[in-house]
Image 1 (cartoon, protein in one colour):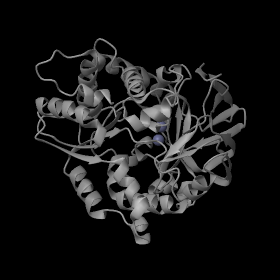
Image 2 (tube, rainbow, N blue to C red; image 1 turned 90 degrees about the horizontal axis):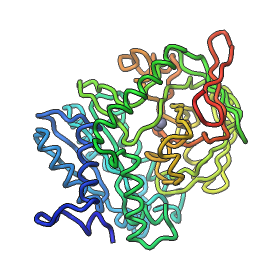
Image 3 (tube, rainbow, N blue to C red; image 1 turned 60 degrees about the vertical axis):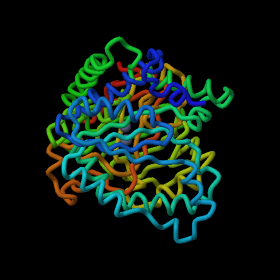
Image 4 (cartoon, rainbow, N blue to C red; image 1 turned 90 degrees about the vertical axis):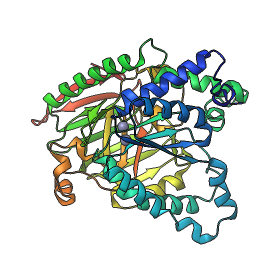
Length: 423
Ligand code: ZN
Ligand code: ZN
């Protein structure tokens, strides 16, 4: 049983510790993550099992002055029925009308909250060809809305919700009820909900991340060099890049933290200036399939060779999505001592795992990582080295065996991280 349904909203019963934590997570999402404004609408997406959390968030949002909260629920079992009974044409279909509606909501300033909790290997037994076609159709239909997110037009955030399927992947040897409870504990800890004043804790952590960004911005490196087992990678950075991390103000003026949790500082690689070999340090859950031990070779920014010990076919199809899918859109630094890494858990969910280790992302770049990037045309962005793609897939390349150097404009290296920790 899922504690989130077991303890749902007993109105007269005293609140359990779990209910208090759930409520604090909702408060953190609305106040620290979204920075929801009075008079603003909220659009939420969630797995069905997240209903108790959705209700807590809805309450906090209305109390914060939201004019309207609209939630769309998704169901893993229904998603699988498409693979069981859908016609061949089904796998090239996507609800473009739905994503147009979402883009329209963003254009009118609606805040966006995503709750993640899906089964990390939901589609791993399905035909990779069908999975890839369905993903492609979905990415294409979602693109106009995604662009508004990557340009940071509105305040948005993502949080986690423990569900039986996800918890079973993280704790395969525990009974379901216990697994769900343990994953909740890990989410609460990673989301700083276990601290006396979680919103204040996020403000403090946020300013630490900003300090780190300021330091890296002053350095203005031309490249980063990652070295470790199976990795010797030089990532050229875009001209006029800037480092981002923690919270920032969206173009609608609202200040929020777009990922809860977040431990990373990240910037924009130059799409043509990545050279060398890199090996993943954690498995990647890519839209319902696990990809393990990824190893790729870059030449002039482009992947020329890609392998994986598991899910290689899915990896190959992913990088064949378009030209930009073979190039980097993000490079991020996370110390090995981050609370999420310290938990020692593999969450099999990017929101958590990417905050446990240094990572890179194939595909779409965040133009906010370029000075004045939000005002550039697609051609100007490309000229500055910003990558463009239908996909944006983060995967982990950091560990306590990885060293990172910053290389300045004169070509001189200086140590940034040693054995996974900031120097
Ligand atoms: Zn990242
Ligand atoms: Zn990313």
